[in-house]
Amino acid sequence: MSLDKKEHILETAVELFAEKGFEGTSIRDLAAKAEVNIAMINYYFGSKDKLFEAIVEHRSGYIREKLELILTDNSISEIGKVNLIIECYVNKILSNHKYHRLLHQELMLKQREGIHDKITEIFTRNRQVMRIIIESGIKNKVFKKVDPELTIASIIGTINQVMLSRSICSLSVSGRKEIDPYSDEHLKKRLVTHLKQIIHAHLLHN
Image (tube, rainbow, N blue to C red; front, side, top):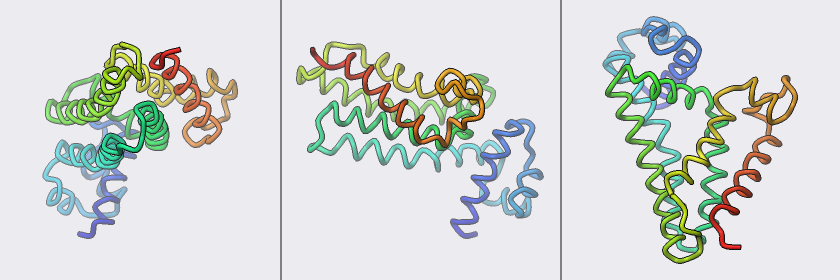
């Protein structure tokens, strides 16, 4: 099985899980949509739960690599790193809103312990990178003595509010129902600018 074909199955699974829910999607549905046979899916993923775990691991690779590069780049200041993280998260989450809604559904429902633990592990690992940067800024007296965890929650929570509801986001942020908040570049720029303004005021000394 080629890597492209495997990725096709994973991407198709995201679409179906987001549309019909995890429980409402069968392996037979996935095989039909992806135009592969059931045996192939079972051979490579073993079960629907393992398929979901593979989706999470596959999708988390990019953001993890990006965060690690930001963390280890000594040429970038702490506030510069925070800026890059905000840009990274806004673009990544809004561009993959179906996947991220799926993650939040699993976190809230907690019906599959293995999947829940895998998602929590990834979220924790990514938040750790952000916490290290904020704590470094505090230690170097570049940042105020803020609560790192709640600072991270403020960033991610704002982006998630935009991501989770298309209609509410469209009305509250743009005032126009017809706008697609997930592909509108102007909205992304507004969100990035807004978050930077709030976080700069929160972190930086006057």
